[in-house]
Image 1 (cartoon, rainbow, N blue to C red):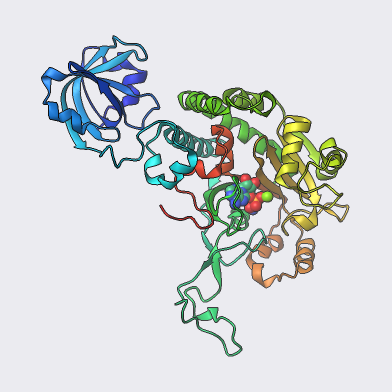
Image 2: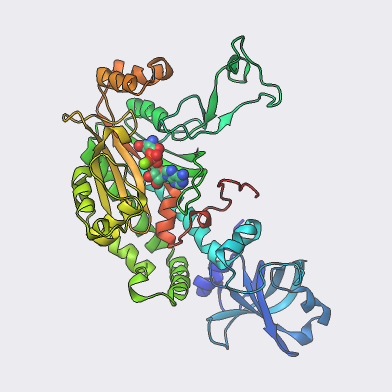
Length: 482
Ligand code: 4AD
Ligand code: MG
């Protein structure tokens, strides 16, 4: 059964046919009019544009219109006609209207336009119905679909990696425990340690921070794989770019070196942006208009580039590729650094880059996306391929304007001895990761991969400024309501 959605009527009225009967259902955005005629703006989520329903009051019981409030849900049958008014080509002349559910105008919180993002986070269960979030959610869907399409078209296999693991892939230790213990009565060993042997899995487990390690096992069997799933980090950072639960795409490729890895990352990001431009122009235009309105008060040099031009800009330019060492020199010698404008001054080689440094390189210095490579091994994870200099690893971070790091990845250390040495240096043991080490023992192969933060991608594509506004139900410190 193919039910008519408002998108079909608005985009292709000729297919539906002017003068033909239509049957539409949706939520009322607004109602206005007079004693003779009422105009109802209807939306069903399929498209950002509303469909205008025109009701001749003489045909309906007066009481009916009182129930057709902002937020209510109705079923309309009628005729598709060319619109007399401005703002739309077609409208529906109502013959019957059934109210599925009214919404009390005193209680329904989304009465007026222009609620703040903060307010809408408090009503995340209803904000999905706003035009704003409709656009974001349709783009979120489009990007997820395009990611699968991109990899599928290139012969990659979608691999499902576990959400519950016993390992800490990134070595950052910011993990959520998974246990069935009664927290008021945790079993202990004789020497007072928590006795995980008695726990559900017989060992200490946590929610995964990355599917990479298992992804590598897949690449060593299938060649090219990708994961796409939720990941969890208990970092207590309340920033506009961090979530405690976020989605990550992690491709892992046998026989790819760091350059192949960078090429794939750049090709993928451009593909996704092009896909959004090709398939979601209505949503992008709506978001762009809203953003421009928000920026009206700002000074010229504080305004960000218009959303659609910004997307085109990324498509048209090659990403700048440079090493961490080169980046540090640029940052250290920058006027910004000399004038003490960085919250974290760039003192010299070895420091971890903060988001402000990444954004300086992208937004102020190069004015283009940047791929940074060859970071000091101390600030990167144990699995990265070690360079000949003994100091750096073959890491790559892709940095985007307005965001900073959007992708983190590397060529992987494929040499068993080198990997073992690094693990020992970090105070870890081979036993913890014995199954990971087996890939280096049995048919080891050069390989690479990366992780794209799905919500960071969406921040870029939607132009939103807070990561809480590109995921339907954000999880952040002190916040898991909906
Ligand atoms: O740089 P990260 O930590 O890399 C990894 O997890 C690797 N295992 C990926 C790989 O090589 N397969 O995270 C990858 C990306 C970041 O670049 C960022 O976009 C996103 O994940 N990310 C977050 N997004 C939202 N909230 C957080 N707390 C995030 N932490 C990382
Ligand atoms: Mg990273």
